[in-house]
Image (cartoon, rainbow, N blue to C red; front, side, top):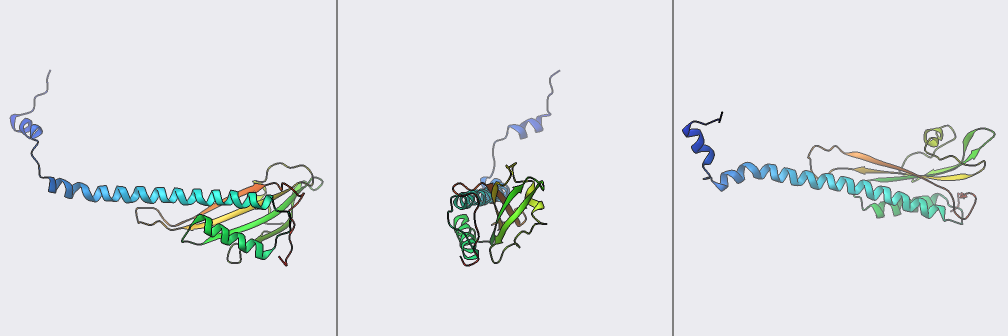
Length: 185
């Protein structure tokens, strides 16, 4: 059985006359919102990727460090992180060095430092919060843990809330057994 529409309905369906200005007025707000939403989502992913790439770069830089680092060095890393992420919002950095103590069956904190306006450095008790991210190591092996935070505020209000991107990278020192810390540097 063939479905037949009444004559006025068929005429309406076949009618291709229209007013472009009315169609544009109906579609343009949705098109603009979709474009802004797409730009905002892409920018959010771009910022998150920049934060992660910068975290890897800083971690790699620290793993190649021969000389001891200190508070000025870590603050300098924070400025490098801020510059490389090209963020208009706040960025923070924390560097921690820990080693595996086989007899105690736990990670031991060697030192931890953070940018002056950032999170507090880790201590032995709070090291357990990140210990799950540290890979299995031999007795006495050390790891450099670089953590970065970046506040992100979307450029347009399209449903995304301001958020904070967090990344953690764990790297072994390449040329020295352990990255040393000197408060004078």
